[in-house]
Each structure stands twice: as C-alpha cells, then as structure tokens.
Length: 127
Length: 391
Image (cartoon, rainbow over all chains, first blue to last red; front, side, top):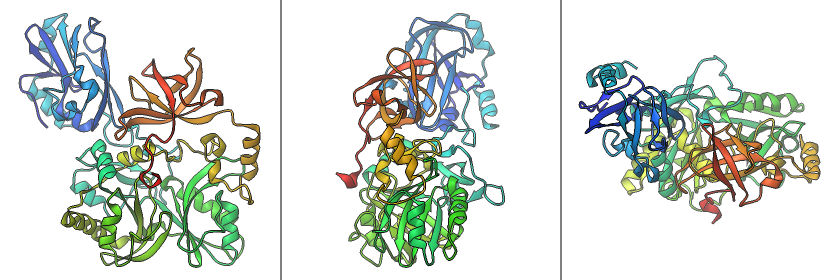
C-alpha cells in the first residue's frame, strides 16, 4: 500500500494533511484499494462545522456505500468539486488529485491524536 | 469509513440471493479456475455456495467497458445445468416452463421463466433443445430448488438429471467475441444465428456453444467438461492476444452492471418468488396459448392489472441501491428499488424499481431516498443500453 508520510491518519482510513491553516482530507490507498472503483462522492456543504469523528460525507464504490469521518473537528472550507465529473481520481491518486475536503480545524491540537503514517501502515497491514 | 471487506458482508447485488442455497457439503465450493483468478489478484467472495471472482485488479468499471468494446471472459461455472429426457419429456418441459418450447428445433435456445402455481417466479432459465433431450441452464442460487421441483413433477419415464458438477460454463461476450470464437473453433461459429447452439471443438475442447449471453453484447456461452476449464480459458486469452483482440477476465460485479444496463433481470431482484411476471414486464416470456404451471395467476393479473410495475429510474445526486425507498414528489412512499448502481456505459446512476402503474410512465418525476435524503429521479425507458444484437 502507498502511504503519504506527510499525512496523519484515522484508524477508519481517512488521512489528514496540513495545508497552510487548513487541513486537507481524503481516504488512504489501502481504503481505495479495498473499496474498488469509486463511482460517487457525497460532500458536505461548505461552511458547515463538524466535530471530530462526525460523518462528513459518503463515498460510493461499485458495490458499497461507506461513511466518511472527520479526522479532526472543523469548518468545511472546500470540497473537491472535480470529483463530481469523475471520481476515479480517488482510485488513481488518493493523496493528491483525489482529495475530498479541506477544513479549518476547530481545535488544532486534535492533530496530535491522529496516527502517524508508520502506525497507520502497521494497523492497516494487519487487516 | 468502514471498509466493506470483499467477503460475505458486501452489499453485492449479484451476491445476495434471497435464500442462499448451500452446497451438499455445506461448505464453500470453488471452480476449476479459482486458483487462476486468485493468482491474478481477483477479489473473491462467496456467491451461491461458490467462491467467485467479483473484480480483478482491472476494476469493475473498466471490466464493464472492455466487454462493451471488445471481449470479456466470464467464469460462470456456478450456474446449474439440468437435463430432461425420456418419453414425454417434451410435454413435461412445456407444462413446467412459461415460454413456448414445442416449436423449438434441435439446437434452438430460448429464455423462459419457471413459475410457481401462484405466479411467483421460481427462477429464470435458458432452455436449449438438443437432439433427444432438453438442456436447461438455471441460476446458481436456485439450482437445488429447480432440480427438486422438476423431479417432483416429472411423470414416470421422464428423466431429470442435475449435470452441473460435470459441466463447466464460461461466457465469452463482446463485439469481437464471435471473431475470437470463430478463430478457436473447428466449425462455423460466426455462421450461427442468435439463440441457437451448436456442438464442436474449441481449441481441442469439445463444447456445446450457445449464441446467448447476459451482457447486452453478442457472444456465446460455452459448456464443456470441467477438466478442460484452464486449458480453454487460457487458450482463448492467448489466442486473443495473438490476434490482437483485446480480451480480459470479467468478475461478477461487472457482470451485474452489464446485465442491468441491458435491461436483463437478476433473479432475487427484478423477478422473485414474490413477483408476478406481469408486474416485472415479463408477460412476453409467457405463452398464454398453452398450459403451464402458474398460467392462471399470470392471466388473472394481466386481466385485473398489476398494482405495481417495474420501471427504470435515472437518479441525480447519489447511487440508488436495492431496498432504497421510492417516493412521489409529494414525499409519499410509493415503492422500493429492486436494484440500482452506476452504469459505466451510459454514465448514469440508475435503479429498477416497482411503482404504482400511474407513476410508471416515462418522464414521471419521482424521488429515491439515498442516505436519508430524497434525490431527484425520473422514469426512463428500459433498457438504458440497447443490446448490440438488437440494433
């Protein structure tokens, strides 16, 4: 599995990466590989504030729908509109063009509680 | 997110028969190509008692598109084959199945339903008339039910045999499938007309070839001894490569989206023991000029008019799936989705749903509730993809 060393992770397979004052989030390579072809992403409204662990959207693969969870609490600043036309970028480039949302973190210290790339890799490999 | 894990928990419509049948040993069976699939990284899942390939690393969407543009090979050995023979077999088969069969000539193949007395659809079948016998292809999950039903009703002298374990079945489908099979065969496959069958040798393997399929593309379904499975499968892929014909193995996920787009039913979804053929739009598969089990229920409902009808829905803003609620524009619940998915060729999120007849007209606006939110839907003409051989 591919890992973005600059990102931190939730056990539920979302990654988070700092981008200026914002946090960018997507799903891990392990997750996209397990789900198979992504055919739809349901995004939250921009401006909405969500708590850490709350559902921010749904990602739909050919055969299953999976909830997406906020790695940290925050206010949605942007969603990846480009995935509306072709969500396959989530499969092809989950840490880059396949990003899902950007948000302003409510409590930046929640970052410290996320899994490091190495810890997530070990956890995901065990499944 | 919670990962589905490609196992029994997955909400795979092709892998969720209402009543999963068990193999005699009550353990998961595997096909002769199981190791071939696994070695190529296929995601496998249990279906009707078999561990079957759901997708290959190619991905379900691309597998679907390869079948539409060139050739897909499908391991469908889980399908069952029942042979009926002996004096009185013709009349027996005619009475048991909904379609007209007595006019069939040797080699002909025809789609039919198998009904219960109450008109519920026990299964759908492909029936081949062969010299001196009837060759009936049944769904994997209904194999034992169908076999028991045929046996129970067979008069003295009529022999009913389940030949599924000795028979391998693969499908070769797509616009270049016949070209590939023609190059592999020692007989004229391209000269066969649709819905006929012929016997001959393909790459040295004795086969019954049916010019039939379940994808909306031209192609064939091959029946042959199970011991030759790897030889024929590998041989066809190698021949395709040699001839410059793009060909790939296709899993059950793409098989489901191909059949769905082409408007073909999947038993347990668009048709089932609790659905009458009239509701699902399958009166055409019932020959009302003959006697057959379930005929009265079909004619009664056709006269009275069904309370629900199967429609296609084009949905915006989400992926409709089996069991999702359908609402009228005023928010009233009017039906349920029987199946739904992303359709790769037509690039639509679509569902098949049962709704009241007054809401079944093409163009009728409806809603499908997806993750708690009503999304816009409109009744569209089925099939979404017109099968290539019908154009």
